[in-house]
Length: 290
Image: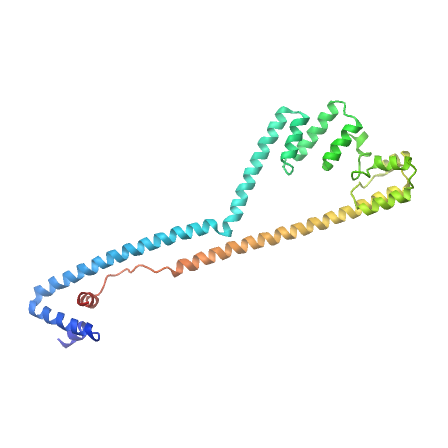
């Protein structure tokens, strides 16, 4: 009896008085009254648990939706979105190149190269353009305009015009020959070549002999070779710098992914867990008394 009194009457103040009153009611009702009374309290607790569980499920569902929105908008999703955009661009480039190829005209390839300057099919388009110029009895002037428009198209120019078109715009090999004919000293031209640090070519001996036949001096050939060496070195340094920047960017993207995964894991661990077991007899009596 005292033990039951201690269990039911555990509490202070008004809770103690309510528990004492409830205990007296239970004794007056007997065993049947106790079963009915506890059953009613259990139903009350069940209703409370049901509503609490429903609220908890709604809260978890809302948090799950919010978490999914944050995940979709998080930096970790950006690389995937960028990959999707890149894939779409490649498909668009491929379709555009096939259309230009089917038309097989200078205008079609020019429009493709203008609209897709970084396309993987750029080299094929340049080669096709050079072949079309050749089929139309392309002159030196036609190829000069071609190289002036597409610097990377020089390798597709026929050999009889390629050497003369070697070098940067305004100071190509044919420009050097023209300047010499105008009476400008080779030392002055060589100095201008070195200031440009432009890419010419690592001429072989046969090409050097051809250059000398056109009147280009050893000083000018040496200046073009020096300029080519410096241009290649600068290009290699730029490529190394770009590769390093790309590597750092990849490391940052990976770190953001790891941070997002860690934050999601911590958020999941902080979410309250649903109770697996129901209320005890003492809790039921307390809730009913309250």
